[in-house]
Every structure is written in C-alpha cells, then in structure tokens.
Length: 132
Image (tube, rainbow, N blue to C red; front, side, top):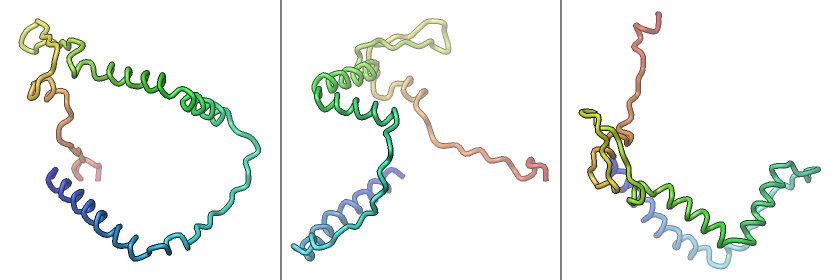
C-alpha cells in the first residue's frame, strides 16, 4: 500500500513538472491579461478580542523573530528528548517487577512497536445484533 502511494505521488509530481512549464510556455505573456474579480465584503464594524490578540502576537513575532524561533526550537528539542537520548526512558517489564531503563531508543525496539499505532481496525455490529 505504501508503494502505491509513493507511485501516486511520483506520478503527480511528474505530471506537474511536465505540464506546468508547457502551459506557462503556451500562455507566454498572456498570463497577466486575466483579471480575478473578487467580491468586496462590507467592512466589519469592530474587531473582536481574538483578532486584536492575534494581531498583537503577529506583531511581536515580526519584531522579535530570533527569540521566538529559539523558543520554538527549544520546545521541539524538549519534545524529542526521549527519542534523541537526552532523557532516560523507563518502563515496567510485564514479566517482572523491575523497571527497564535506557537512555536511547534503538531501531526495532519492542517499546516502539508496542506503543505505536498498528493497523486500522473497523468494528461493525452484525445485522442480527441490531435488534431487527
């Protein structure tokens, strides 16, 4: 199934990379002749509190890009800390009461397979159990 998805993505990518330049070449400078007509909405009387807060947040991000990007990067590193081995991960073994701890998850580790989502299971009641 994954191979089919990869083939579909490759086919769309190939079609895009071949057809888009051909269409743009055919249009040439006529591509700018068209006009997009948009309806104008009436102006809103006032902004809501969410709009004002998001506007202030956007202005802060625009004025201070490096501190906010550093904070976002730090948050991502903290979220990935168990995977990259900065924080030891422990779990109880089902066969014994001892805790198994390791500082880094290895490929093919059982802990990854047991916690990762598996195949999709659809549960549908049988017609006889519907009360008909």
